[in-house]
Length: 419
Image 1 (tube, helix red, strand yellow):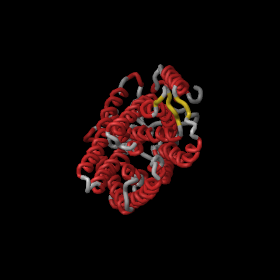
Image 2: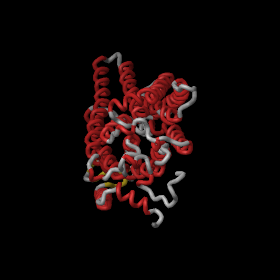
Image 3: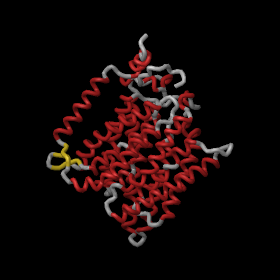
Image 4: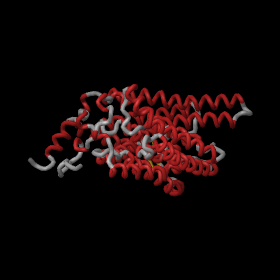
């Protein structure tokens, strides 16, 4: 038998026969959209000024998430490779969808670095959701999920920006909340009770944990750029950078402290450090430009980091079997819970700042509450629809024996032993 033949058989089992047709049709459609309607905005000077921050966000999303998801001992190829593919495909689709919803005029959609940035930030939701079903879906299922999620998130942003009057960059800060609830709902459809407790291939090994913590370091380093890049006023942008850094620093300290406190033998848990250190940046995102004092950002980071660790330590093993969901990466506790904390904090800060105008205070608070409710409800509904679609036999999903295993999708000329 030729080398790689067993892997070819596995790939045939997990991929639909119509895959080539689907891929070709999708690529042709995207090329026609770009050729017919999308045009580059000639504002070169503005693009050049934005490019350094653009690179920060690009590295954070593409490199950071690819490494962060690579913690599974036998799923490193797929974690990194599929993340790159979803990011590349998702940005193109997000440019088209966002362009026709937000930037369509005179029969054309103008593209600049700011619109590409919004597209990159939008596909963060896809990468977060992919973490919830990591190792349990093939690439075609992930593509389907990405196409639906990007479109629904863009539509949700239109509701909270054009209908509720929320600022555009604030709407993008809800990407974590949307991705976490969307992905968790999709995972409900892919739930299998035999995954509790964890199967052997769902565990990590020292080398894979090093890659994951490297992803955390990239995300942690560049998160201030993510939260501040689309803020327009210089004073607010400066506040966004400072507040994000303060919140990230305290959430990192809280992650170490609470990880040790919740451990039975007083050791640190690598999953807590990889994920809870990021909770401060998630929580502070929606209110990052209106926080006036560093201690508020630091307190928010502390609460988010502590809440994330406690979620991993106590909620995950009790809540998920009860709700019949299987969240591979714990996105509910890394992104969902901190986002909820951040949304509540933003409403409180608005109420405090608007005490002199009771009527205006009530309206602003209600619009912010409405935005959070819209994000959660539409994320849940879209996740239900997408999860239902992914259960069709058409996709030829991997059997449970091939969960968390690269050999179902990648060529391995060497033997699997020792992998």
